[in-house]
Amino acid sequence: DHAGKEILRLLDSYKIGTDEILLDRDRRTSAKTRYFASGQQILRTDSETPLPLAEKIHRQLINKAKAAMADCAVVILSDYGKGVLGDGVALELIKAARKQGKQVIVDPKDRDYRRYGGANLLTPNRKELAGASHLPVDTEKQVAAAARMLIDEYDLSAMLATLGRDGMTLVTAEGGVSHLKAQAREVFDVSGAGDTVVATLAAALGAGSAL
Image (cartoon, rainbow, N blue to C red; front, side, top):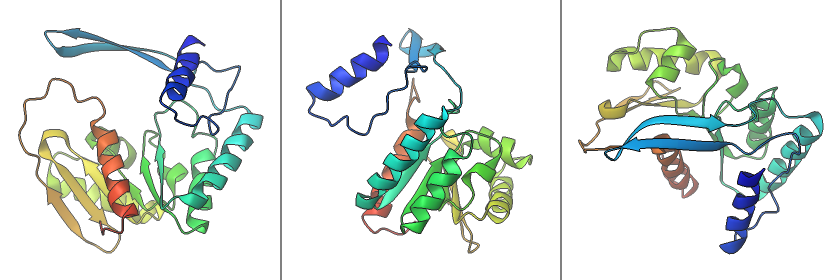
């Protein structure tokens, strides 16, 4: 697993702790290869092991996460659909975080949102929202309706739908709906846009800001 070894080497070189990293001998570290032409990404290939965690690693992950939550204000679950948060892992982490009084933000991937039940905030993109709700999401009104249905069904506190060039729509369990327009920019590569939204939200909420 050369990619895994390289990550550990880089973290060590920047004096970033690696005590929380779990090593699974049966799993390769995901590696993404991006192909560019004229500065624009046209293709990506992934080499990975997208399988559920083995029981031993599953328990180690839960235990480490529960311990780490003690020093956090916000817990982020970023589900890339690689198997790590499957088999009840996500739901178990959400329950543990809420029990400790932590806010939980989930960047979802799976269409079955039962695995994210009880989270404070989900941040699906338009395609993910449509897949989970089985509703049309072409207009702001439709996006809000789809988000409302999922909030009610899965006991969520709020949902922030990211809509690319159309901005974002925030819907809360109390009934609030806010549409946030995007500022036009010429962008060649949107990799990491959703991660940036989640990180900024988590930092703001952790500092005491309201949604």
